[in-house]
Length: 126
Length: 126
DNA sequence: TCTATAGTTAGCTCCATGGCTAACCAATCC
DNA sequence: GGATTGGTTAGCCATGGAGCTAACTATAGA
Image (cartoon, rainbow over all chains, first blue to last red; front, side, top):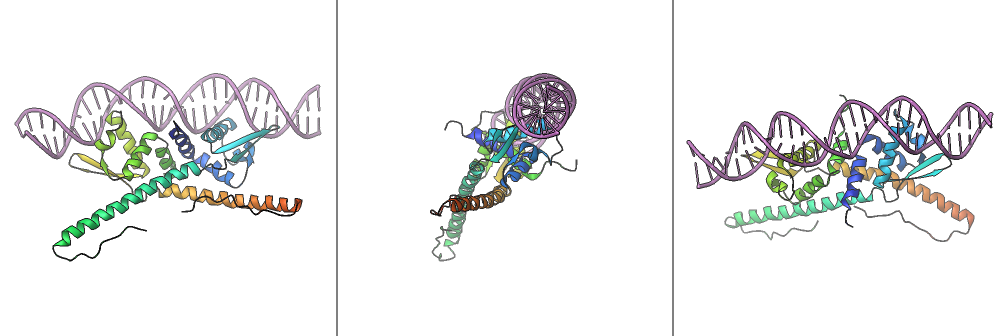
């Protein structure tokens, strides 16, 4: 797993473009040919194909040509990689919030220690 | 003019860069000054500042200058927007898979005596 | 006050991206 | 077989992103 980050690079870069996000959204509803996908966009085909290609090299989209028609579909685990990233971040972030809260609680406790007999300050859980 | 890049555009573009993802990850662990953030990266400060700026204009990161030190932290709802997008997509996608699965099941049933119930579509909940 | 520190601004390269046209296959269809 | 359709390749251009240096501002510390 040397360079997994570059995969994330490409996934996020792919999703940074509204045209490509729209393609992904459309493919969520089922596979489609390049032509069908391109139809709603006011864009020359070669330009559009670049988007398809970007999505393919990011691993989000798979395509297959049969006859003269290329059919695209979402990769089964397409969005998983990126979504996982978010979840990891959120995990750290929330852990940190917890820790921060602990810290604040501890401060309060220490500071109030003189004034107030502390209630058993034990949180952590959620 | 009317349509400057949408917020999602900027968020995903921001996350498409490994340096910036690293910054976000680091900020998950708590706020830090620009200098502290920049330290692990072998990069000139002005270059690094561009990354910070990209993160700020994406709304992922907030910063505040006090004295000569600029302190950065994650925006509280930083990753929410993007994460939501994934969840929406996944919803549509899974709905569609379910429909597809229904279809497959129906096929199987029709073709033979129905035997095994399967539900492969499920992945981690949140 | 003088100096070191922490960022900032300006301005330059280089290359990737997103768009275009034009010409080119290769299936299909009449 | 010839025309049509659906994609592909090649090549051009403009923009913007990522990096750099150099010079500057402003605060903190001695």
